[in-house]
Image (cartoon, rainbow, N blue to C red):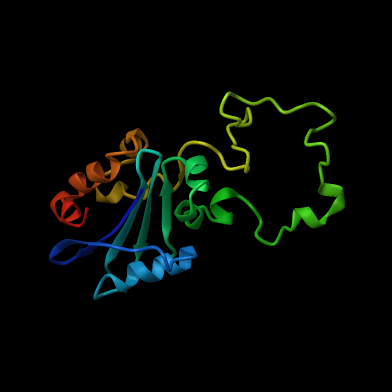
Length: 183
C-alpha cells in the first residue's frame, strides 16, 4: 500500500493534498506535478511525500524551478517499487545513463562471478558491499540535508524509521494537521 501527498509551503503556511502517481513516469513528471500544487511555482517550496507501508519512504523537494532534491530512506527497498524507481535516478545511483554496458561483450560476466569466485552475500541475498541484486545500495540514499533548513537536520532524518516518518517530519514542519487531512 502506498501513500503519496504534496505539502506546499505558502505565505499562509503549509497546504496538503493527496496525489495520485499513476500518470507519473519520471522524476521530471513528479517535479511538474509538485510545481502545479502551488500558485507561485517560482518561490514556493513543495515537498512530495511517498511511502510504502513500513518498507521505505521518500521525500522530494521542489523549490521553484530548481532541480528537485531527493531523499529515500531505503534505496534497495524503493528499487523494488514502481514509485521508488521514479526517485532513484541514474545520477543518484552514480550510473551513467548513456552506458549501455550490456552491449559491450567485454563487459559481460557470463558466469556471474569475478575470476571464478562467487560473490559473498548476506542472508537477504545482498552483496557484501551493501548493494542489492540490482546494484542499488541498501539504506538511505540522496540529499540528507533536504529538510535541514526546515528544522529536520541530517541526524534526525537518518534516525527516522519507515512507518511513521512522514508524520514525524510533518509534525516538525508544523504541518501534521494538514497532512492528516489527506491521509
